[in-house]
Every structure is written in structure tokens, then in C-alpha cells.
Amino acid sequence: MQKKLFVLLSAVILFSLVLGACTTPAPAAEAPAAEAPAAEVPATEVPAAEAPAGKVVTITIDSWRNDDISIWQDTIIPAFEATHPNIKVVFAPSAPAEYNGVLNTKLEGGTAGDLITCRPFDASLSLYDKGYLASLNDLAGMENFGDVAKSAWITDDGSNVFCVPMASVIHGFFYNKDMFDKYSIQEPTTREEFFAALETLKSNGETGIVMGTADQWEAATMGFQNIGPTYWKGEEGRKALIDGTGKYTDAAYVQTWTDLKDWAAYMPEGYQAVKYPDAQSLFTLGMGAIYPTGSWEISQFEKDSDFNLGIFPSYVEKAGDTCYISDHTDIAMGMNAATKYPEETKAFLEWMTSQEFAELYSNALPGFFTLSNYAITLDDPLANEFLGWRQTCESTIRNSYQILSRGEPNLENELWRVSAAVMNGTLSPEQAAQEVQDGMDKWYNP
Image (cartoon, rainbow, N blue to C red; front, top):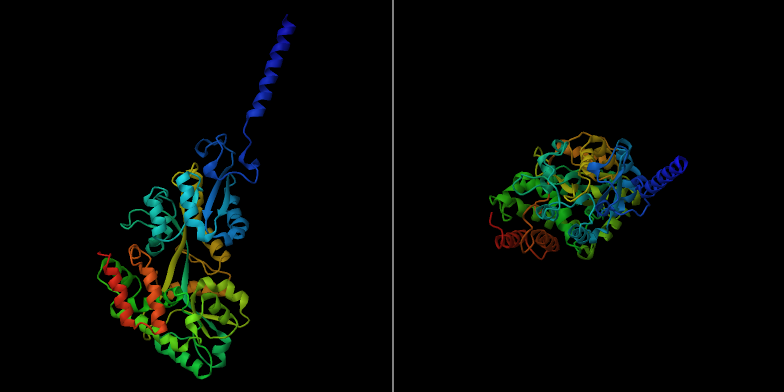
């Protein structure tokens, strides 16, 4: 009898062990490659707050930067995971043009990633106001970003910041060094020197400014927002428009459009029909001397140009004036308020405030510069030169992006339209200024 009881107990114990082995969930590290994003984690996975030591948690990044997949997978994520072995990160971008709609659908359905890549200003502010993005006021490391850096991802009253600033792009001018050397032209620093260089080029049969107006946005983004800060004094003028003490009919804006009108005499023949890709090709083929643009062109221009490239910041009105650059806030990262892994997500965001991330990201994407206060050195000489302008010039952002483009007519679109029209000779600078201000007066009452 005792022998039979012993056998029966042994069988029960063995059966319990086998059953336990069959029901124990596999660790996250063994999940298949097609594992669902963090917001869709199966119910059998252990929540981060209760995860025992050694458990691996996977968090997902939603982004529109699908061109950056290799940079995140090969450089940025491995650096983070090296010091956070229990956190795995998946970079899962959407097509840029579809990102806003896809992200909103995923957030509404509860399937968005743990980390949300933030566009600047109103698109992300709307997500925060709807409760989709968490406040990051208490995130360690946010003190490494100044007010201008945080301006694109903060509530209108300045009480809540909701994304970690990642990168900006800096406006300026590329130029053909070989052509400048051929005609003994020095980098211009003042308006007078800039137009003198254009006259020298024109007198020698060269196209001075490689740019078109067919797409309109170039006239505003690469023209108006590039040189304008020197006239409206950067942040001082931008904030004056917001609080109502400044108007687009002020002399600073009329002068900016006057400069653009004067550029037209040095642009390619038929520039009214030249589109953005056409202008890029004209410049890289050596068919013009100066290209008004920004740091985002570095990689393509270095790849496609067979001449020596140079850059210079926007000219000032007269020697000794303060230099201003449009150092425009472009991209940031926030936390999905509904993430199941808040601690792990915060750990990644805190790491993004570090100097290590600043150097990795800025070197991986030449022309997209950290918005942190760290002094970093970049491997790309042109990128390093762009970044160095922060030490000699005052930084500002595009003056149509914060608050002022919420009504109709849309200010950003109006600046595109009138800036192109001024360069095409169909509007005077004064008419452009009046039309923009009239549009603002229809809805904006600070």
C-alpha cells in the first residue's frame, strides 16, 4: 500500500512540473521578429512595473523618419541597449506624408508606440492637449535644453513641456568655393558685400543665386526665413508678432521682401518655373554660385558635388551688427501617455538628454543638430561649421510656426505665396507686407 501511494504521489508531482513548464511564458528576448509593438503586448507578457529582475521589456518608437532606419538600428539603439540590457527598442517608422494620420489612428485605437516622434509646434501640442502625450516636466535631463530649444514642444503658457528636443536645422548659404576663388570673391558678411559678390558673378556671366519660385515654399523658407532674422532681430521680433507689438507691415519685414525682390536679378533664367529638385541639380552641377538653403542639404550636396563646398551664415545689414541664424526646431521625442512601460520609456528619454545621444545623433545625421546645451564636435566639417555659428550668432526659429499659423488664411502658406510673388515681380514688398498683415488681422487678436 505504501509503495502504491509513493508511486501515485510521484506521478502527481511529475505531472505538475510538466504542466508548469508548458504554461510559463517565454521571455521577451525569445519573441519572434514580428512581435507586436509595446502597445499591443500580449496579455501573457509581464508588465514592466511588475517585471522580475532579468526580464526583457520591448518598447517601440513611432516616427516619420523612415530614411533613418539604419541609423537607429545600427548606431543609436545599440548604444542605448549596451547600458540598458533589460530594455529592447524597436524603431517602427511610417511614410512621412502619412505619419500624422497613421499616428492619430493608432493613438485613438490604443496601438501606438511607447515613444512618439514629435513634429514641431501645433501638431504635437494637439496630441498633448488630447492627453496622448505625457508631461515631461520632471524628466531628468530636461535642464540641458534652453527656452528656444523647448519652444516647439511646450504649452502656450509655458507650463508643460511634452517632448525631448532632438534636433534642429540651421539656415544659411552654400556656395561653390571654386567659383568664388576663380573671381576672387570672399565670403560676404554684410548686405553690401553679398550684392557686390552677386554683381561680380553676373558680370562674368555666372548665375549668382541658384533658386526657383515654382514650389513657393523655397521663397519663404530658404529666402524670407533665412535672411529675415537679421532685420527683425530674431526672437525679439518673433515674439513681438505673437504679443501684438509687432506687425508684418513693420520696416523689418518690408526690407526682407525688398532683399528678395533684389535677388531675382541674379537667379537662373526662367527661375519662375524652377522647382526645388531642379535648383538642387543646377547647384551640384556647378551651374551657379550661391544656394540659399540650410544644413539639411549637407549629405546630398557632399555626395553630388564635384567642386569644393563652402557655407556662410545670413548676412547682416552693416558691419558690426549682431548676426542672427534661423536655428529651427525640427524634431523631438515624447512619451505615449498610455504606455504600459512608463519607467522603461522614461529611461530612454532620459538617455536622449545626454551628451552621448547628442553626439551620436548629430554625427549620424549631418545637418541635424542637437538642441541640447552640450558643446559637441562633429565629424563632418561642414556640419561642424554650421554648428559653430551658434557661438557667433543669436539663434531664433521661423516666425510663422508658433501660434501664428492656427487661423485662416494660414500664415505659413501666405508667406510662401507672397514671397514667391515678390521674387516674381507680381507683388511689391509693401503689398506683400500689407496682404500678410491683413490676413492676420482677420483672425489673430493677441
